[in-house]
Image 1: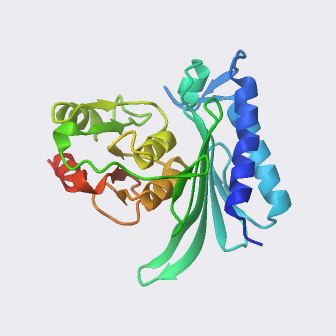
Image 2: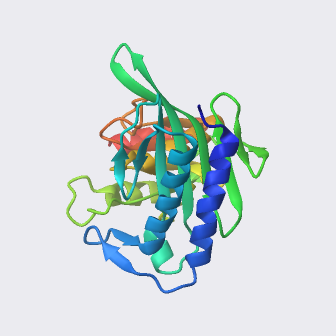
Length: 265
C-alpha cells in the first residue's frame, strides 16, 4: 500500500501539533556536535511519525534525522525531518517545520535511484502547508504556487545555510555568501533548509543554495520547488541532488546559470 499526498499532509500536521505544543516550553537540549542540537521535541515528533508510518504502511523503508535508517522491504522510501530548524526552536525563534518526502526506488542505467514523488513541509506556527505530487504542481494551503520570474541577479533575493562543521570545513560557504550578497539584493540565512526551498517555490526567495546536506533536509522541499517551476540540481549541476555528496541549487529558471557561475568561481 502506497501513501497519498493526503497521508503526508495528515502526518505533517500531527507532528506539527507536537512542535507547536512544545514551542514555548523549556527544552532539554543535547548536543550531537559542537553546534548540532537535538531537543526532546525532535524525538517526540520523530517517534510519532515513525509509529504512524509503520502502523499504516508496514514494511516501510525510513530515513529519519534522529534514528537514522529503518530498513524495509517496500519499494518506497520515506525521508523524515521531524524538526527542521532545531537551533531556532531551541532558542524560541519561530522559523522551523516538519518535512516529509516519499520516494520510489528504481533501477536506472547508472544503478539504484530514488525519485521523490510526494512531499509535505509544514510550518505549524504560521499554519503553512507546502505540498507537491510529482507532475501535478506545488501548493501552499491548497493554492498553487510558482517561482518568481526574475532574470536579473542584481534584483534577486537569495537564501543559504551553513553546515554544522562550518568552523573547520574546507568548503567555506562564507565566501560564496559574501560574493552573492554583493551581486544581489541580499542573501538571507533562516536556519531551515526545508523552508528555504519552499520559499523559493512560493516566489519569496529567487534562489537557494547549500552544501553538505542530508537527504531528509531537502527531499521534500526539492520536489516542491521543482513542481513550482524552479530549476533544481546539485550545486555541481547533477540532476540527482539526493546522491552524495548532497547539495542543492534551486532557483528561478531566469537566474540559475548566473548563480551557478558564481558558485563555480
